[in-house]
Amino acid sequence: MHGNPMNIPPVSIASVKAALIEQYADATLRRRASMLWGTRGVGKSSVVRQVAAHFGVPLVDLRLTTIEPVDIRGAIYADDVQGKTVWFPPEFLPPPEQPAGILFLDELTAADQRLQISAYSLILDRRVGNYRLPDGWQVIAAGNATFHGAVSHDMGTALADRMFHFNVQTVIDAFLDHAVAMGFAPEVMAYLKVRPDKLDDTQAQVAADHLVGASPRGWEDISNVLKSGLSDNARRLFVQGRIGAANAAEFFGVLRELQAAVDVVRLLAARAGNDTLALLPKTLDGLYGMVYGLLAACVDAPTLARALEIIEQLPEVRSQAPLPVREAQTLAMELLMQRALERGLEAAILDSASYRRYTEQRARDGHGR
Image (cartoon, rainbow, N blue to C red; front, side, top):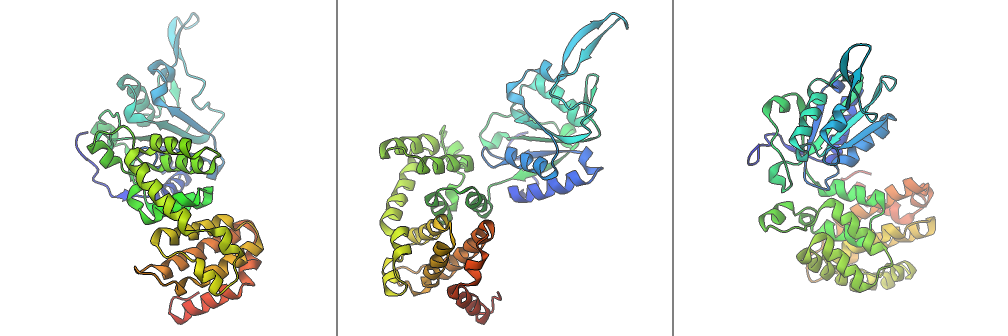
């Protein structure tokens, strides 16, 4: 394929997961392979693991760039009884006694073209050599196109015509939901909330011919770096080495601002009213830094109740530049409710006068509860 051949709309990884779950649940559709196209770090591999886990079925994950063509076709041997040479199938392919599962052919477009021939046999005919894939298994492949800036071999139309295709792209809201669930560093979530264009800069990276750039997987690594005990100098080196010098410089600039503007510990310890108002951030970065910082701190009922009081006061903030305080307040309340449900702290929400006043105000504004 040349240029950008995607004549299908981009979809989020969450939408792909839902579609693959429905496909697997249908015995007929399950027999047709699906292909996930997308840049590195968008979550193609992880979503396939999640689908297998959803159904509790085995997953055979073949990274095609790490194996040889003979590894899929198997080994040939002489059968004296039959007077023929026959093939021993590889042990990693699903045996007949495993009637259902997912066979994942990762990095399909980057694999050696000789290997792709064997992989295509599994996709087209659900067999290779004498081996036949059990009927209950679904084949899912993943890879990059040439315009994603990765090593990629063309896929012919004959093969493409035998697959469902998904053009997977990064969507900031879906990524932030994942980041919250995985406990990412609050600074990373706040930064990407304000600068969603920095989630994935593959196109700019390719255009500038840079080796290193930002990606969803890269931001997960940056989160781990921030949560580690590394020294400031080592932390800077690791961040630069993961997302590139320019991205790192901008990120550390915001990080300094967050550290200067947001002190979650002091906020939680302050009294409601003027003491709290004096500590509320007055910049966009600081606003979202506080939201995600409070979320990370809410591990028990008293802290959650106090966080709700702080969020209630957000509309009182006055700053030189207009801030989306109502939007930030709604986001914070939704995140805190989600955290309460995850940790069994619903009572702290229901008993909170701040939360009751918030829902009553939303009802008066016509937003409902």
